[in-house]
Image (cartoon, rainbow, N blue to C red):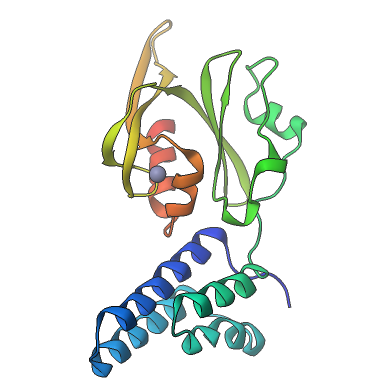
Length: 212
Ligand SMILES: [Zn+2]
């Protein structure tokens, strides 16, 4: 069976599995527990509509999940079918950021690529933050400055509430020598941000906004 779940979809399934388990531990009303479960399964089916019988059977094992331990087991098995973020060669990175010289590259060894929706890393040389994502199977790169300070807020990319910092990106204006700056608050920590992503759309909107 081919891998069939994207990392953000895996996070979405995880979120619903957690909701199911917490309904069980917080409610004694079997109708409530059943309703939460049916809702979760419905949403997951909507997320992944065109599955083979085998894929659907694998996914619908969520039906048997009753407690945290069973949830962890289910998620661990499901994770085997997640499509990892591809490893990107130095050459591809260079191509995505053609004007940047001696760019540091992300450490793929340290990364859980099955929980990675987009790449983000800091390059000491330029003191800039770089991002790469796959959009319509093409690599798209973003670069900018992530401020050092942080505060509690909502992240533009993952919509999660947590420690965020202002990310500012510059774009050349139509007139020579002019620049326009755009800023958004994003999670300070890229790993947390990636794990929070259950919907890919805000990330795409963020990129389109910066590129426009
Ligand atoms: Zn985030």
